[in-house]
Image (cartoon, rainbow, N blue to C red; front, side, top):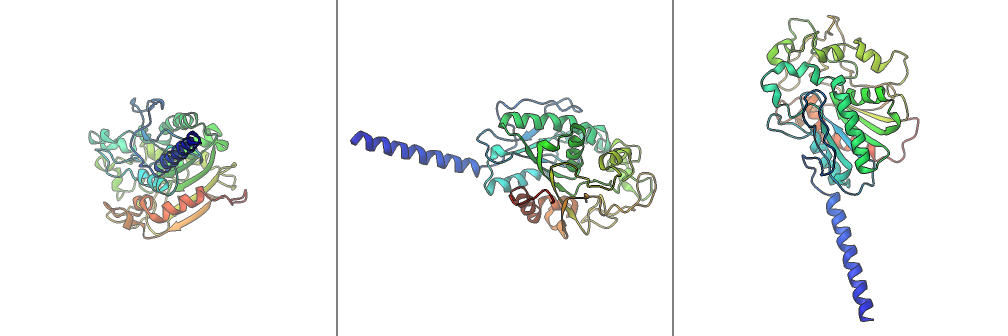
Length: 333
């Protein structure tokens, strides 16, 4: 009897320790490294290992992959103070996700190469085309590492069109269960025009000229890239079984609206072909759920811009979390 009581006590202690360890892991801190055993993936354009975050451990929920926007990183680096998808992932961790279910990838490096040449902001390494091979290999690595059959994706800005282009190229709708598209350039950006008032054309501002690689993709709703990505059939722009939520700005966003966005001065609403164009609904997607937010500049502590603030917004975080955890979504969403 004494041994039996000891065995029961030991078993109960072991169970309590397991539960405590699991709870601590679930409420863990999202880091800025990839776990041991995760494959080293070389950035196709930069010829250096991809940076990112993730963790080893049990996986119960669908893993979430967080994608930053252009000129950003998955976490703050020595050359980039933003990196706010990590903070969004931390919100998920604080609300029940395990850190092993939360992944981020830096498909443009740490941004330290920009110091030598600001025009790299609009160059080939910062395009959707360059990012797709990196994302493709990262998603496969996450699925193999976790044993998951699907992933969820949360993207901001360029991360939105990057995810959509990878899905289109690989016909990967069956691999992406749900997708949160935050203020993405689905129908182009405003800062690629030949208009003399478009100061983004200057090399010091990024060199967003009509001929730059980023602008050839996103400078107009009518670029070959966006025509192919969006189609012209009039149907949903999120074809397939993937459920999509758009979270976008409704009043200001310096890449879409010709209005002051915090400290960012507006440019004319003209596309890369010189045609007057309304980009204000660029982030929308036909057939997707949509949340429209205003006054998001208060969440950008540096530029006070809505385009960056919306990624750091409690409203966005809650909407994304609720969407990925809504078990009542139907096929008609």
